[in-house]
Amino acid sequence: MIGEALLDATVSGAVLSLKIAVILVPALVLYDLLAPLPVFGRCGRALAPFLARLGMSPPCTVPLAAGLFLGITYGAGMILPIAEEKRVGPGEVQSLGLFLCTCHAIIEDTFLFAVVGAGGPREVAARMIILISVRLGLAVAVTRGRQIWLGSRSLQA
Amino acid sequence: MDRDHETDGPSPDVPDFRSRLRRGLGRGGHALWVIVRVTIPTFVVMDFLKRMGVIDRIGEACAPVMTLFRLPGEAAIPVLLGLLLNVFTATAALGSLGLSGGQVTTLALMVGMAHTLVIETAVLKSAGARVWSLLGYRLLMAVLVGLVASRLLIGAAP
Image (tube, rainbow over all chains, first blue to last red):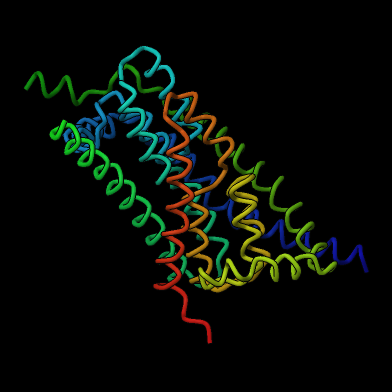
């Protein structure tokens, strides 16, 4: 009786693990295959004016991308050396932190929650779109909002 | 033309295909190991707690808070696991509760906003961010997002 329950729970846990792994592992491999390509370096440079409006200078691009796609632990690992070399100021680190707090690890988090919920492919796809767009939208809005707030404060001072 | 060519050419920092593949497989393999290591024990423990009636009691205790988000009391379990441990554990617990699609999406947004607080806050602090405000912001945002998402994605309780 207890053995059967244990087996049942183990099997359902293993099935969920496999369902997650089948999507997540290829996605992570694909990220590492594609991310270092020069095309994405050019995208990063093209985004520079947009990032400046969010209070981040070009050296923030790499930690931002790493944090956004893989997670805060990876992203911050890349901010540390840049911050220590004083290539970015404390205000920029705060902007980066605010952005990444709101939206990070979008590959992992999105797939985990997409797979775990009930529903067919359409519902799963809808959930993924909602998760990514809400988090990304909030991150941009909040970080930009902070810049506007700081800008209006410095004008009054 | 020359300048264009220079910026478009492969930069010397791009590692070759095999080392990129190796790095990706390493990351993927690590994620797979974490998922299996976390999901199976979480399922077994959740099943055990369910049989002991513990999940029902936690659910009853947390119901007053979780109804604000139009969620059942047991949904507090993935939220707490997410805050204290990580998203993997939260999703594993979530998977064993059998919630509706809208409820899962609402929880995903809340847990997405605030999770792994101890580790991630320590990491941000070492990077030089002012972390107390970020921490407060994440918790507040998780509540706000949960309130809004539940109104949009989950039907009103009968």
